[in-house]
Length: 336
Image (cartoon, rainbow, N blue to C red; front, side):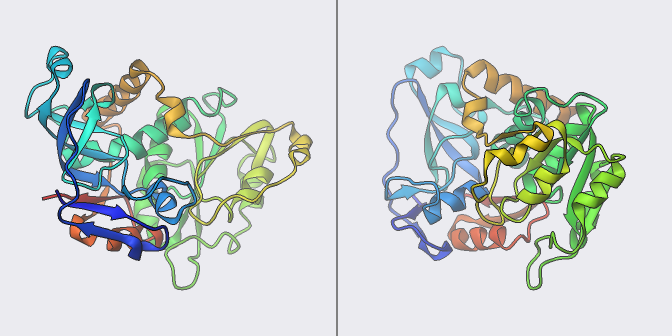
């Protein structure tokens, strides 16, 4: 089968499309999915670079959507049928076929396109746990939440979900993506200049912490959702209210450097560095999160922007596009 494979870590050029990579075999409690889409996420670039170590070689990706092409006896007994439309998250989705445990499958409602459903699996579920669970209920409806990079993929979802949860939202975004950020419904939107030669926000172009104090009457925010990383860690900590929580979930600008825990004492603040897998531990939790997202989509309460579809033959170009900060929504591979 065709697959985008990493045999050595490095820049996007190490992501090579191979036409004859072994097709996965069907195991017990599994189905084989013929992929139509694979999501491109920042975590895929961390795997490719070696920031998050993987055994080499490996097929990239961990977000897919398509139709069931083969199924085990256990899958058949669970009511799954050949041709069912499904989305899922397992490692190795940059490929024509993926073996997927039955417990990881999400049936896709007829009203939702497979491209949108595929977008839900990592970014949508990540935004869901960030706005429902990772803050440990330290923020309540009516309180302020700061979300960095709301014009990007995951945090477009997060800004909308935070509003659905009843939080007041301050979002940051680059001026060049104003058209994406403004319709999300943030109560306050802080627009920043772009770093020269990129589409990324320049967090030194505006005194974001001072603006947040002004907006919140000096109190600060009860929760910060930060996928930017190195460029925003100081802003995020400084923006917190008393007993607020800094939720650091990504490294778009580089990994967050180590800092002394004593730095949190001024506001008795909390910090967490969560990951999606710890918030979909059981089948029940996975389905609950997915059903809530699909429900919002069907009701029109949640809007999803699919920015660009690359062909799998353009594997490296997809990573380059994402890492350059050019996306205004979800970036996918279309697998044909």
